Image 1 (cartoon, one colour):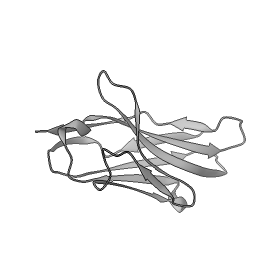
Image 2 (cartoon, helix red, strand yellow):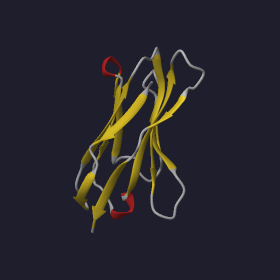
Image 3 (tube, helix red, strand yellow):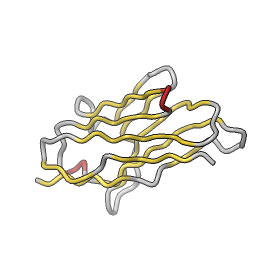
Image 4 (cartoon, one colour):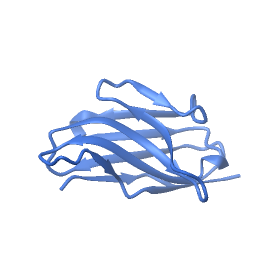
Length: 119
C-alpha cells in the first residue's frame, strides 16, 4: 500500500526557515504532480506549492519568493524549503501526490506535519 510521510515541521521564529520532506513508499509505478497544502485552525485547506513530473512549479501568492518546492524522482520524494517564515504561515502542512499504482486510486495524502511560526 502506498503511503506519503511528511517530516520536518516544528517551531520557528518569524524570519526563520524550515524544510519539509515528503516521501512516498510502497509499490508504485510513477508519481505525477506533488503538492504541498496547508490548513490553519478555522480555515480551509489551501494549496501552497505544486510541482509536476516535468518540474513545472506553481505557488500560492502568499508564499511566492519565500518558499521553494523541489522533487527527487529517484527517491520518490518532494521537499518544501520555507524561508522568511511569518506567523501567518502557521498551519498543518500536508503532502499530496498523484501516484500511479496497480490500483485505480491516484490521489494520496500524508498525515500532515505542524509548522508553528512565533512572532
